[in-house]
Length: 378
Image (cartoon, rainbow, N blue to C red):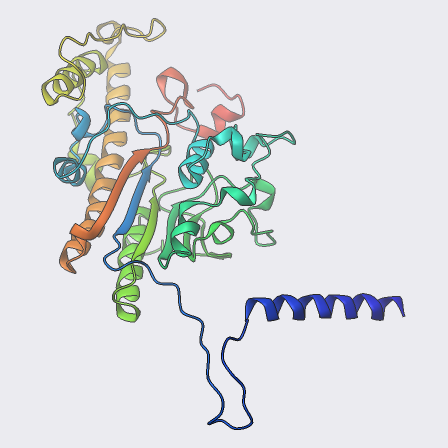
């Protein structure tokens, strides 16, 4: 009897909720002719509402990309910067999860449970990696305003114990208003052999194909999704969050991209710092008269290194630059596609990094990030 009462209460509650959601405002008469149909008005975005495309890159320093004086050519970013705005007083947190959650929700990260990385979530207010329902992201806001919402790439502010096939999915992209998701639920991954998800289902990309790289896969997905949206709803605006694993370790780019930078950083980091500052002053990124900050005393002067050390550090920078330049190229394919279909001028494009250059490898870099996290010396 008790089980029957509970079932009856649940049934009544569900029916009441459904009725409230589907309130009928038409008329039901004795005949069809006496009746009036009613269809709720679909939510549509305002006429001419712009698309929104966000590229959130990972672990890129302020002076790495060429629009901010960096020595790595990033022509797509230069094109956007030359036709848009550059911000030289813009702040992020020092970790990826807090920045990503803050950008998504538009809230201070401590206010939404993301005071630290989701991997180190603790059962205290501000640090539990459980954003409140009141802190839904801009994807949810725009979806409710008639946009199609899409998330591609890195999503790492879900607690680790919830990032599995069993869920719960409240703090996955789908629970935050993103209708379509293709990406990875971790801080980083193998660019040549990633573990990817389509919504809540793990998938195996075609990484056996020669030359597979996750950045190309993500760009292909972005273009395909926009194309499918235009085929089914040619006026519906979209919001897309495109979050590369680059330039977080591991610094993996296709071989031909790595070879393009061979020898380009043999001048060493001391000379590179001077070159970058000079470019920044010339471009107006920093004020005239800005002086180069002292090199960290724990990092030896370049001219004191032996030949093997110089070759090692130069090669590390070549790999980093290759990954950055290649990411810029793949994002450029999305920009070019928007131009081809005539939507570039009606798309708000935002680019930023989640934080500066990574210190996970210490001051001298690392060949195995997991070794660092487990206290294994290089």
